[in-house]
Amino acid sequence: MRPATCHLLAAVDILEPCPGKQCPFYEDTCMLTELHPQLARAAEKLPVPALVSELWVHPRDTRVGLNGSGLLIVNPPYQLDLEMHKWLPELGGALGAGPKGGSLIRWIAHEQH
Image (cartoon, rainbow, N blue to C red; front, side, top):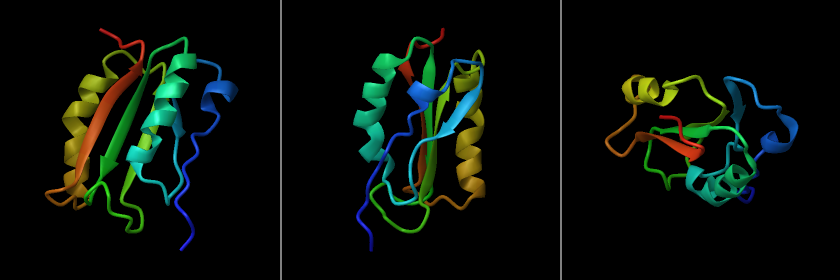
């Protein structure tokens, strides 16, 4: 088994801020929680709003296949976070998320109100 390494894509450096840009931000062997320090550092460089969306179907510390997915959304559309709070848990259920599965939507830079 190869070591679990996580690399935040250079989205902050290569993407010009524009509405709705989405970047998958981790490799299949990475646990989402391992990225939180990298996301915090990336957020410091962003001049525009950004949020993180995560979805996992097994306990977060499980390294089975593709346990979850995450997006870093730079300059998201207004109130996208509110809409995602409505449908992301439903998506988890449709994907067979167990009782330890879940979802998370959180602002990492310049929260919109």
